[in-house]
Amino acid sequence: MNLIIYGMIICGIVIMATNIYRFYRYVKGSKDVFSAGSKKKGVWEYAALSLLIFFFIGYILVAILGKPDLVIAGILFGGSIFVALVLSLLFYLTATIKENALNIAETLISVVDARDPNLRGHSRYVQNVTMALYDHLPQEKKEGINRVSLEFGALMHDVGKLGIPEEILNKPGPLDDQEWAIMKNHPRLSRKIMQPLKSLQEILPWVEFHHERIDGKGYYGLKEQDIPYASKIIAVADTYSAITMKRSYKPSRSYEEAIEVMKEASGTQLDKELMEVFSGIPKEDLLSCVPEGVEV
Ligand SMILES: [Fe+2]
Image (tube, rainbow, N blue to C red; front, side):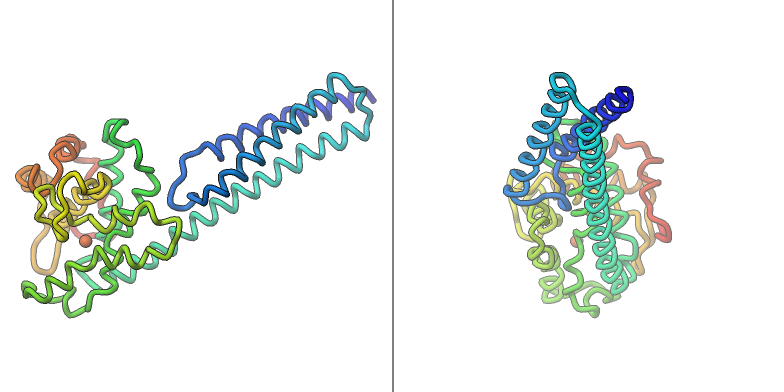
């Protein structure tokens, strides 16, 4: 009997310790656009973690100091299984919410792409190139920019084109001044579309300022120091995508040509340091960023 009692207690301790570690990693993990919640949510998470540790200490005290019988051992073992199940459910639900949010975003982007044949695959391409650039940045430059949030921002950067009339998006010739003024509104529209979603607040400026230039001659004339770093990253990826993608009004250009053109724009249109990192990314890595079905 003792063997069963202590077997259950030891199994319970191991299960409980493993789950405290799982929950600790979840609570301490970096918050992205999908998991960012209110401060209140963070307080509840820490309260739940503290309570779990409190139970764990109680568990050990009962096992060492008390004389546990089969009932107590059963309650402790059952409790550890309950904690494991609840946490697994929590992680599963969080993953499902993230996946659904991403699917909704992808649906929105496919609507944007469908309205403009020149944009087909562009957002996904910019997303992939943005992540390639981010992954090559030195660690100190990555701080303050959550990887998942940046990925989502890059995917959504042109969602505001939903608000631009198709005649302007699909105009075969150059846009006149009035049409340009409407077109230049798309980053603000991207912000407006995402504004109601509380968890997206962090990435709103990243998206709104993706057409700003280092020399201040961008869409909204922001000065270099006022442009969010994430916007500068997206701008590099956006430019590379625009040059290398085939459009109805221009052929695609090679990796080498794109790098040459972008180096010329370094320090005026594009951030100098980012361009240094970008031109150091192996060619194959950038070629592999092209999404399926995109003509380059
Ligand atoms: Fe754009």
